[in-house]
Structure formats: C-alpha cells, structure tokens
Length: 359
Image (cartoon, rainbow, N blue to C red; front, side):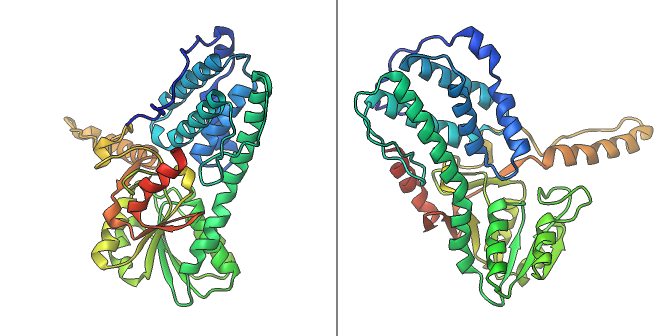
C-alpha cells in the first residue's frame, strides 16, 4: 500500500545537495535517540530525526525539501530490520510537509496524529519552513504525552480483585499499571520474564515487576512456558504494540500472538494499549506479508559429535540476540479492544481513525 498521498500534486523533485546528504547521518541520529531516550517511541524518534534533518538542511525550495525528506526516509527505513514501526512517523511527517508546503494554507493536525499549524498570510518559504519545524516539535511533545492520557483511560479497566497478565515490556502497559497502583487499586499482575521477554533485565528479572512491587502491588513472574497454565488465573491480558495496521491487527514483540491465542482459547479479554501515532497504513493478512527481516527458524545439522556443544551454545546466543528484537503479528480477531489517548476502540475502527488522520 502506498505511503504517500496520491491525490496531492507534487512538484518534480530536485536532487539533494551531495555535501549535505553526506554530512547528516539520519540513521545514526535515529538510533541515538532510541538509545538515549528510553521513553521515546519509534515513530516519534523518526519524526524527530526528520526535524533535525530539516533544521540542519540548506534546502531552499519546496521541491528540494521534499526530495531531501523522501531520500532520507528511504535511507532510514533501510537501516532497520523492522521499518514498519518508524514508517508510521515518517509517512505522517511526509504527509504534513506536503500538505503544508503545497497548499500554503493552515493545516489542522492535532495530537491524534494531525499536527497543528497556526494561520499565516504571505509567508515566504523560509518563514513557512521555520513555522513548520516549530509546529512539528509541538506535535512531538504532544505525542510523548499520549502515554499519560492512555494510562488514565485504561486504568479504569483495573478494579479491586483484578489480575492482569502481561508480556513484552510495554511502556504504555507499565504506565497504566502504575496509575492504578497510585490510585490504590487492589490488583495483581502476572509478568512474563525470560530470554524472549524484552521486559527482562540481564539477570532475567522483569523490571516492571520490580517497579510494581515497590508500589506494594503483588506480582508473579513466569516464563513463557507457563503462559497456558497462568492464563486461567488472569482476569484479562494487556499488551502494548509497536504498530497498529489498517485491519486492526498489531505488530508487537515476539510472543504477543501466542498470548492472544491463549487468551481467546481461555475466554479472557485481550486489550492492546497504544498511542494513535503508531497507526500505520499497512494491511497484512499475516506475519509473512510484513516487510521484516528475521526468521525464527534456522535449520542446522551436526556432522561431527564434537560440534554438538559448540552448536548448542551458539543456538542459545542466537536466540538471545535475534528473538529479543523480533516481532510477530496478532490478528484483529484476537483483540478485544484497542485503548488509545482518544478512548477505547474496536479493531475494525482503526481504518476509520486512519482516514481521520490522513484525509
């Protein structure tokens, strides 16, 4: 599916000045943002990287600016194994740039995925560009605040006596549970830990469990192997997402789909809490339709018995390196509801929300 706006005419692109393109490394900037700011999401990091790109850019025309954004976006997507998560941000930013620069009229893009631009008359390109960058930064700030608003909405699902099962180390889930703990709700949490859980530290202990226990919330930590047994003790499951696609399915850390299948089999609600700026115009029918590097299957043979131990150790290290960053696709029929900063939505409402954002 195309990530651009086909109904908007675009001027012929100019070539990006070679001296600038070689000076600004957008992939390194993006990676550094994710490494230094543990609260930032991938779409927002992508938008901030494009803002930094334009701030340092010598581009002086609309066509040159659009060409720079397009080429840098392509470079950024090629630099990561899973470009879908960041493409939610780059596509949204490109749409904003095109509609603002070409129309010359104010846009009305808010925190739900649309960026605000104040009224302006007779601005030249330089002034428009400066105004555009300032309002882009306002959007980034509002996007970062979305997690707090989601926590206030989703915390209402947690009542006295509730037991929540979670996996994947979602920062939005953590925010929801901490709000409920601060509100003195009497609830319990089952937290998945282990080599495949991103929420686990190097010693295998779930960091969310540590934080909640300090708030006097009872937490049980379990390995992935115990999910089927533990699900019967949960009131519902709650996870985050890296991306939400058009059909209402979610792309999230490896194991989320497994939890969704178990929750449906056990008749337990399965909630996804996520920011609306992670909604992306992609329509996969399964994980095989996603443009993501990595494969959980790596078939090998051992011809020499002396190689057994070496191969076994290599497999363990490979699992820790590869599986920790891998994602899977959870279909919309497994999801009870999506909770965003704008409220609670059914999975089939995602396409409607995307229409509001883009058109």
